Length: 217
Image (cartoon, rainbow, N blue to C red):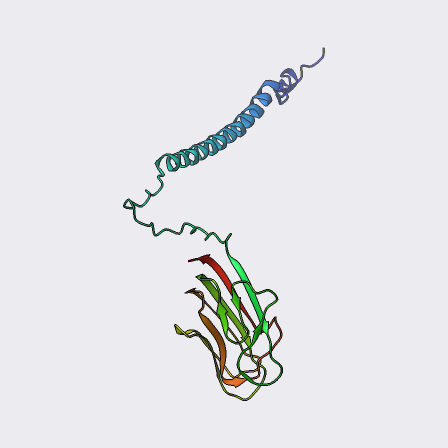
């Protein structure tokens, strides 16, 4: 007769049970991560849209509430003091005469001039106006290097005496430029003098006299 074994032989041994992974649970965990990522994206988009809306609202507010400054109230008949461009004078009827030097290398006091074509002024030292009207006279004088002494250039008429005056310093190759608008009558005379006398450059680009007739009187 076979002997009965011990109680250990009669009770079967139990093994540790490890459940198999559930694919549904793994899929659920991945879905939670994806949902959280999408939520962050949605929140970022909502924030960006909010900022954009505020910017557009501010821009529209500035557009609607901006008003230009009202134009100044200028009384009727008065001249406005604005920076608007002034009308250019009509110079279609203007005429021009240009005179060039007629002296040598010596020192001169009374300047002599010549012109190619005489129109409304004639003469050489005493320039005579032949037509009455409004004129603009301009003069450019250049001195040669000489003694350190200042010079004064005059444009004189018999009726008005001095009409132009310029002081030129004693530095080398000093230059003076002057101009004036004046009404002259037919028969008026004028001349150009240098006091004290000096050696004046006699090239037409360095010393010249011009008279523009603006209109007839």
